[in-house]
Amino acid sequence: MDSSAASRPAVVIDNGTGYTKMGFAGNVEPCYIIPTVVAVNESFLNQPRGSGKSNNWLSQHSAGVMADLDFFIGEEAVARSRSSSTYNLSYPIQHGQVENWDSMERFWQQCIFNYLRCDPEDHYFLLTESPLTPPENREYTGEIMFETFNVPGLYIAVQPVLALAAGYTASKCEMTGVVVDVGDGGTHVVPVADGYVIGSSIKSVPIAGKDVTHFIQQLMRERGENVPPEDSFEVARKVKEMYCYTCSDIVKEYNKHDREPSKYIKPWRGIKPKTGAPYSCEVGYERFLGPEIFFNPEIYSNDFNTPLPVVIDKCIQSAPIDTRRALYKNIVLSGGSTMFKDFHRRLQRDLKKIVDARILASEARLAGEVKTQPIEVNVVSHPIQRFAVWFGGSVLASTPEFYAACHTKAEYEEYGASICRTNPVFKGMY
Image 1 (cartoon, rainbow, N blue to C red):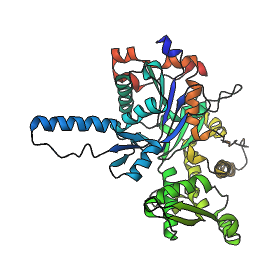
Image 2: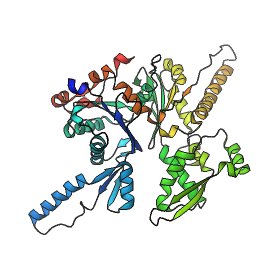
Image 3: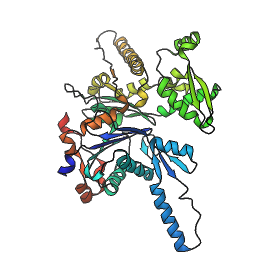
Image 4: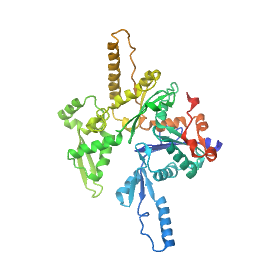
């Protein structure tokens, strides 16, 4: 182990489809939360070919070098693509999986040097991955980290395990539970028993934060709101983050809006990006209809119509029987799209209904011969669930066991990238 690097705090980077959270181990909050997007200047790569062979090679080479240098990430990338047509946006992660490794490498480069401003050779790194990531992706991550950035040690953690670790307190270290991770690009329901993911019971839902944004955008467009087309997605995203909430009964909510529109309908004002002219619109039913697609997905999608509480119940029912009570008791929310007001209350209520109905049915079937013990259903919500995965990484990476569990540069040079396929769990933690 590199003792000098181990004496410095580890770098924790949680790359999500929509946002990346980064900072140093031991901190309570990430230093930066930025959109996972890269803007590359395409004009360098589309230069006309020169007439001479050597000239052509030189111009192509310098164009490649310039393209490698001239790119932006995060909010800056979005701003550049709006102000200049030469910058094209690239989203390196789609549905939780890295799709474009060149863009991902550029993204990490800017994260390390421009944002965190640290030397990667002086810090151990903890990176995160989606629960259904193929092992080849871990190898690519290891190659980039050890070859390009020359990091002394690397740990690739599964996001739901870190979200459970985020619930650590001094008195309670509960590493059995179900993590409902609703990010921007994917929703996963992942059962974890004693820190190990029960892989065969993972459920994936094709509805996530980006779908809520698309649905709000669609509702506002259908109502004929005065939003410029090039700005409509961004407006929908901000409406989702600022105004949306989860309702207990959709019909009652419609009636409340219709009775007192001045109380529930919110005004939205913006400036057209191309002309600079101001515009305004109203935000109405989409405030509660957006998050409703998790509980009644048929209003948004024809292909998928299983509500999230039913998916969670199926996930727990497919887990080993001796873990089920503990799983129902500790359902942990993670990800920005679980931050809607009253989301956890609605989830707990709907899930409790399903569980209670099953117990009643089984008691009726047994004609009262056996009295079933009631099952406690508890959905855990906490203020840091937006970056719960990052915080869990920060907690784990500040323990002594972390450095022992990391793959080192020396191991990588001896055995190759295949060492990254598996990561030991922090045995000393439980």
